[in-house]
Length: 195
Image 1 (spheres, rainbow, N blue to C red):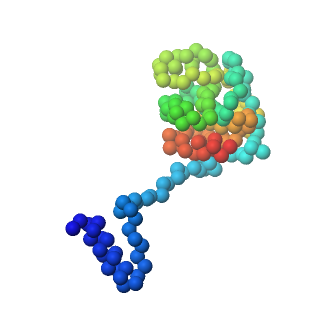
Image 2: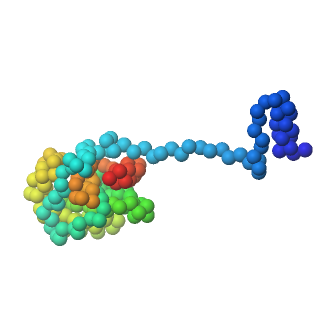
Image 3: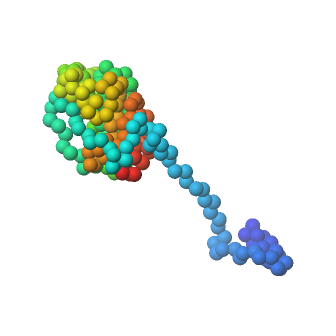
């Protein structure tokens, strides 16, 4: 006698006592279900400043050394960095990987890199020494940085890296000072999806 037949006999014997025992389901299989854990999304903990759309400050790009970028079709994540900023340099490869992951997940966010280095030659030399460094924009010159930071609501002496999350309507919805980690992927995705 197999286990299924034995189980059926036990259930029939219990049913004879007048107890309410449900009949076995066809196929007799059982599926153990586990509730999936939602990823941790902590927008308030991630952003140093976070604003709802109605009260968010308009994003204004600084004067740039080259042409201004076209308007984004969705969200834009602007990574403000410099070649002399050690934490900026350390996170560049990870950020480039996140950019690929956003594209693979069809998340409507563009990751843009904005260097605050003094000249194009400095950035070009750095990129030659670090071939994986993403292409990006550069401010016109160092004198532009402080006033630009003030114009977007930051202290003009803010430390790098700075991460600006700008919605499709060109409003700054989140500012994070300091490094971002790969584990922040779900929080960034949650920020974008929440709109």
